[in-house]
Length: 146
Ligand code: FES
Image (cartoon, rainbow, N blue to C red; front, side, top):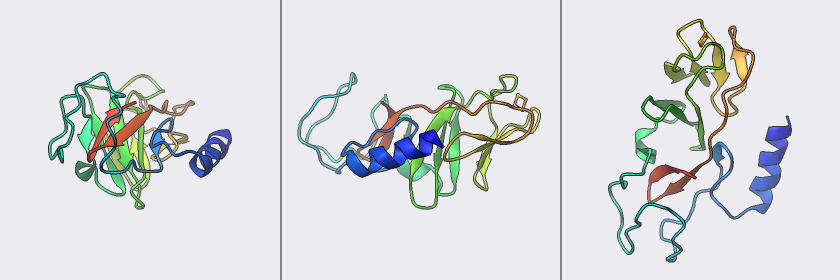
């Protein structure tokens, strides 16, 4: 509940595209040159391909589903409205990597825990804690860690 309230407050007042865990407001497609990333930023391009630091292209995250990035131990979800959220992909029960996203939950096949795909809260199974949110940002059609 506190997290949802914080998101609502931040979403109403903020102009940034970054919130802990979810992107609720997309950055403009072309931004003034404000180097905020550690990675080199190509300026003045349409950036059809994400740079090496991109986690995924927005278009590659299915609405109502998500992608699991095992190498980064992250799961990216996208709801029907296009809101993208990021969480640790390490199940809080016994540490398996979650296996799928669907029907509004992030699922762990090891023992059946399920987590809400927009909040990370546990909704079923033996896990007691939510999946930790990870701050991400969107730029040029791709998702990056914030
Ligand atoms: S490790 Fe995920 S449910 Fe047990």
